Each structure stands twice: as structure tokens, then as C-alpha cells.
Image (cartoon, rainbow, N blue to C red):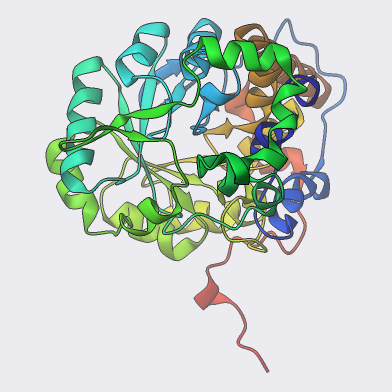
Length: 384
């Protein structure tokens, strides 16, 4: 449905990944390699999906991941998605590179809302956004560490993103028909103000940053471990580090005193051919040894995927594409439907497993391939 409603360049922004999209595909395929070990003859009245993340009670172990430019998919996209998340009793995470003011997004949800932080514009600009997020009532800060530069998303190149953002009509001309072929989307886009700015990146003397290729801005604002120290001084709430691939980074994050980490390869949109997140989850779980909460994103398409991630040690999962397909298809109703599909899938999976609660899920419910190692790299056999 989203493919039919959105221009190709917008749909492919949601649907695509970096380079050859190997990691994008493997994130999903990894779940196929983990198989279930169900318990038979188990009678249960119902299934309890409730959990807590960073002390906040949630109705299901599924958070909506930060997705930049969501206002391109549907008018007021971030606020619409946050409202649906709150209605479902879960967390919405707002991207720095969003099209809606963070205050409006916080006001739209009756559930917890977290703010994802890039240092775009430099430390002073980031501190301003952090202060606004704190004042608005955001309950956690998510610092993304895997984006020193934007990944090479070849679909964007083919669809003319550079030309469209050049504002040069001659360069844009070849790529404009894809918008004219989606009149319903185009009408909503224009009514919502047209090409958005980034209202949460307020540059000194310039105001909100203009919508543009953010690769250069990201290169100039790389997050380093030392940045967590000043961030901690200006943010007194929980800090989550997103973009952990390895035991080493997981241990470093725990040493820096973060409250949670997200095992994430950015949905296969950054460095291609890194392992799928589910495969490295056991390594990360072993490395932190309970010091911080562990979340996972990448490849979540079914409720059974959620269950497998919880069996391997995640407290909850984040999903990005699953709900943004819904947002692109039908706005808030589409996000609500995506959440309900995953919720129903998870309930059915638990009943078929003979497990009454997500809190009871552990490795005894799954068969794990041998290459899903929970050994740290230094513990492995040396090469011959």
C-alpha cells in the first residue's frame, strides 16, 4: 500500500539500504535460522506482553525506532506516529532529523517519548535541542554512534535525490514525474508545507536547518565516546547508545555509564555486509553481563521475530520499517495497524510456544545456530 501511495524516491528511502543491501536482507534472514522449541499440552488463559524498559511500564516489548524525515511519508508524520505509539502503550523515539517540532511530537503522545540525538550543527546546537527535549518531557536520550557519514544508498542516487535537492529545475526535471504520478501524496505534501526543514536543528543566526543531503553535516559532527561525558552533564535522564555491533563497543558503553544499548546496524542503511543484529546479540549480552538493558533493532517483521530476540536476551525490540510502511500507506491508522499485526503475531507465537508471558522467554525456547556465538572475540580460537 505504501508503494502505491508514495513517490518512488520516498518509498525507496523507507525500503532501501546501503550498497548491495546485503545486511538489509540478512537482518531478516537471520530470524529464519533461529527455530523454536515449543512446549506442548500447556493450557493458558492469556498472554502477558507487558514489560518495563528503563523503568517505564510498556504494554508490549516493541518500541518505534527513530526514522528521519517521516513527515515526507505522511503529513505531520512524526506526531502521527507518536500518537499511535502512545495509544498502543509503547515508546516513540523521535529522530533529530525530523520534520515536526519536538514539542509537538511530545504533546501528540500519551506514552513515553525519547529523543534520538545527532550532533548535527555542533555541540551548542545539540545542547539547545537537549534542553528543549528535557523541558518538553522526553524521558530518555538516544545517542546514535554508527553514523560518522551517511551510508551509500544507491536507490537514492538512482531516484535523483541529489538532483531534487539541488533546487535546479533543469537537473530536477527528469525526476519530477514520480511526484506527479502520486497526486494524493503530492496534495498532502504541499498542504503540509512542502519541502520540510529540520525544526529541531536550530542553527545560530539561520534558524532551522534546511532540508538537504545531511551526509556533510554528519561528517562534521561525529559522536565520540568522550561526548557522552558532556551529554551526561546536560541531560540528567537515562542515556541509550544506539548502533552497537560488537562486544567491545557494548562493554565500552557500559563502562561509560549508559543505561541501555541498542544492538543495531541502522537497518542495513550504513556499513553494508556487517552481521545481522540477531547474530551478534548473544555476544553483546555476554559482554555486558546484565550491567545495562539491551534492545535490538533490524529485521523485525513478525511477532515471532520479537519473541526470538527476547529469547536471545533483548529486553525489547525497536522496529522502523514495519511501522513506516504503515505510516506511508495510511498515516496514523497505518501505524496502528502495523503495531496490531505485530502484537497479534506475538500473542499467537507465545500461545503456540506454550509460554504465558514475554518475561518467561529464554534460550530454552529456541534452537540457536553455532555461528550465533556468545563468546567474545578474544575468547575464540586463534587462526591457524
